[in-house]
Image 1: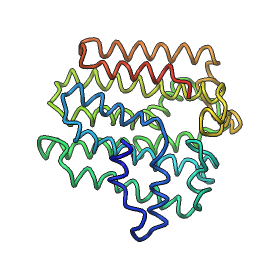
Image 2 (image 1 turned 120 degrees about the vertical axis):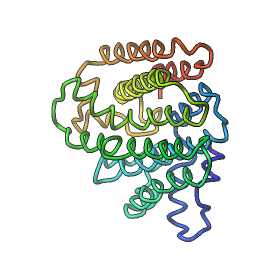
Image 3 (image 1 turned 30 degrees about the vertical axis):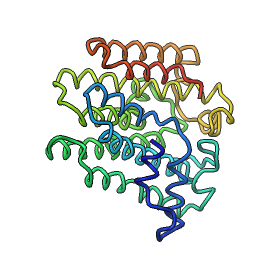
Image 4 (image 1 turned 180 degrees about the vertical axis):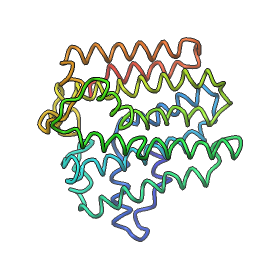
Length: 282
């Protein structure tokens, strides 16, 4: 994935050099790459060409990286550490960090339009729509808006779930759907099960993130630990407690496995990713 991203990102010596260096700084050399892993695992389920999935995975990771750059800026979470190194606006400056996000988002759609990732144009056009919806006001950006508006408030569990279905879950669901779209046409019931799996692992990812924010150190996480509590953000831990949040993560893990039950061995990597997301320690 790192090699693919290096290939798709503009070289640092091309004008504007500083912006291109900052884009590469934000994307390369860190992160768990969970969304690309999900795209490849879903692609394997649909017997997709890995070369196609690589393009989709790179586009999704660019959207994710841009969201992190903007999320860390002073106007949002005002964080100074990401993936074990200074955040983009700290390493460069706020204006450059803003432009990094502005540039990474269209680059993601550019690489999806100038490469063949599906068997027909109609499917590829639908894939662009999936990524656009997952990234916009009815997906990731909308979830972030709800998150910012919820600081200092007490949310119910359904309200918190609604926020994270959009903020974190939308792009995770898109990764699975787009990876599968690169391959053979899954039936509607198969896609329903895949989307149910992706929804549950997306929520599980956030639940575990909330637990780790309370339990893990800054050095382990690669980002500032305890930030959610310090900013009075509603989390699964603040609502359920640590034990309740861990229990919910295990329930979601079981739901994810149940959604894959009929797929057999083709879903082995998807099952392994559900386990990794829930059992991870960073």
